[in-house]
Structures are given as structure tokens and as C-alpha cells.
Image 1: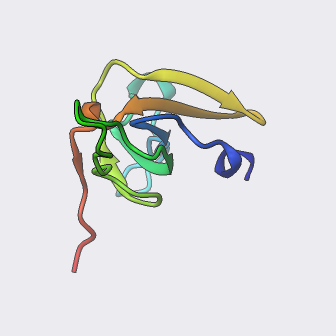
Image 2 (image 1 turned 45 degrees about the vertical axis):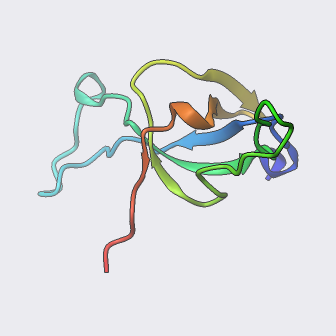
Length: 101
């Protein structure tokens, strides 16, 4: 995957949005007009973090392969090898979705 070679700078996070489902739980095909952009994604790559006023490196809040909750608007859309990704700042990510146990 070419996006794994891209290393975001500073506190940027490269995210691939999840695709909306094309079928309902009951198996009914959903029309494109009813499918909306999901606010969930998977972190592909993270930058090293930003520095505080003293020059100390602040750690990132997410790591690769985390499933995250994204804001509805914002981020910079990037296309790499015909795949769509979005670059967000670490502070713009709303939360990390925990796996069901």
C-alpha cells in the first residue's frame, strides 16, 4: 500500500474513511442517495507529533490501525494510487473507537 510510505509531518494523521454499507442489515440494497459519508475511519499513518514551547515532543493521541471518529467537515483530502485519504491534525480527531469485547 503506497499510503504506508507517506509519513505525515508534525501532528498530522493520515486516515482512510470507511465506506458506507451498500446493504441494510436485512439484506436490502441501499440506493446511493441514502448512503452518506461515514464519520469513521482507520488511521494509516501518523506524524512524530508537535513540539511544545520548550521544544519537548508531545506524543500523538492515535497510532496506525486505530479506528477513529472523525469530524463531519475538515481535513485535507489526498488521493494516492487511486485511493482516497484525509489528513487531519491530531487535535481534530474526536475519539478512538474501542473494539467490542
